[in-house]
Amino acid sequence: MPRNTSIVLSDELREFVEREVRSGRYSSASEVLRDGLRLLEDRALTRDRLKAAIVEGEESGPAEAFDMDSFLDDQNAAWGKRA
Image 1 (spheres, rainbow, N blue to C red):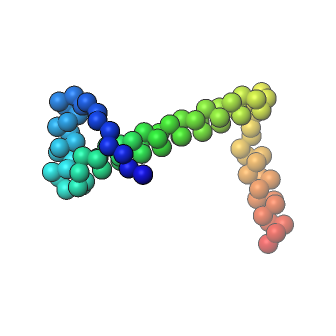
Image 2 (cartoon, rainbow, N blue to C red):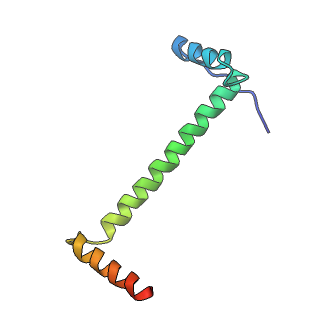
């Protein structure tokens, strides 16, 4: 359930919020702040996923040499067998 919360913004941020509302992109300052918080939440989730992927990569063992030509030859052979 929505709840009123007071926040203090710098003059710069207050002006930015007001410009966004005047532009018509948002109908209220609350909408601007909610959208900003959603973006911040998405960014935090992305950061957490990237950190988890880094840990997974580090735990997967040492890097191995990769030969793209050999890989493509294997793929072409596999697809050729399917046709």
